[in-house]
Length: 593
Image 1 (cartoon, one colour):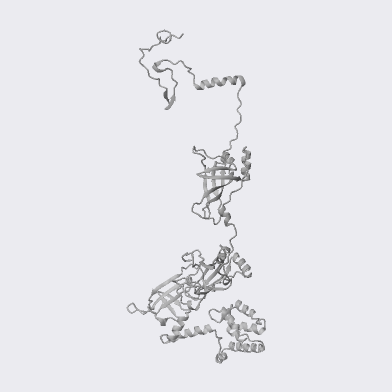
Image 2: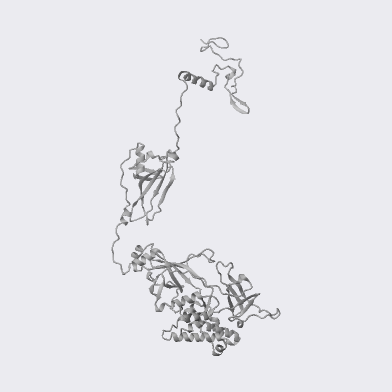
């Protein structure tokens, strides 16, 4: 029997009562601070200050006492070595399970099909339990295919559970985002992995086929077309087959013209032509994509269609007698399209193979279009940096203005282009009060034009200037007309002849004439070679009458001239001018009868 702690009465029902003398009913504080940190204290008294009869040992002391008993009996316990931990992203890195599946999709708005079967691949990534669904791309299917569901963890129910590789098997249905996929098979790696984990795989099933796709695989219905040429057959046969040609357009004959490179595409599917310009870095041109848009190109128009408004209306078969075809594009031959003459110098390997199989043309070598720059002309210049610079002077008869243009020269260090805009130029020596400007009579071959302190020497003119000076001879001085006559004479390249008076005065000329006469008598029975002079004139661009020694002996070798003969050697010595120049005018006189 337990007695009442206060009054000594038995602690029995009915004999217990409240202590009316107790006035404090608060709980003891268990939170304290030590060195600025909160520390939990175990209470020693209960509510009202009654002392608690509990074990005052801490949990750490109790744990220590509990652990001492097995140590005394069995000794120190041996802990097993920790197992090597390999994270999942390392153990299953680049290990993917692949399943073949399909799903059925309704086609409500089509009279040819009511549903379609779409085949997919389901990938399960073991490193992070994510999945993705990929649909292989089928050409001309009309359906956006590829990645149907991007890589992510996929939910399998409303509770938020995700699909695990244990949930996947052959011959089952899985629902992902409202679409039901039927898994029919898996690859070898997936089968080995699942079987190694104790999963029994269902037997594989056959992949369901799309009925409309199978219908399209059937051969086309044969029918007779109303014309001999079937354009649909050409489209289906030569679809995506294009002939590629590399061509140039040489416009250097015109003022400010240049040589440009182009790529010509000929589409075999519909016989259309497209021309693209090849752009280079810092070529100074706008990078427009096409020079000529893809279209059919007429080759021969009917007689009544020459005045057809082609810039407004499209040309039809009624206006065209013949169109350009693939046989008109041959490497090594020029081709005129829309008034421009293109020279085809190369093509790609597919084009060579096509011409060999279609037309039997196997020899289509590439033509080297690189041009060697002519040697610069020697001229006197007060500024070394101006040596070799060429300009184009234009004189406007309507306004008496002059414009100067400098053709750009690559890697010259000088920016070409407009050197002088249209302006009236004052002649040197004229006063400010009464300025005298340059007129048409001041421009002729050999004239020196001074423009704001810079002197320009006129070396050549175009044909229009020559015709204008001949038709307006009264406006020009005799020196100007003489320069034109000399220019025309140099173009005709006549052989310079010496009169008898000069021959008598110069003994060297007498020896030359005697040597030429002797050589002509020896070559009297041989055939005359009148085209020797023309061969030398081709290399003499300036019509100076001289060529270098290398070119001279090259031409002599091509015409098989006996340069080893003693008389011919003496003639070459007498016609030599300096160390590298030979006068071919007097030389060819010995071979002309």
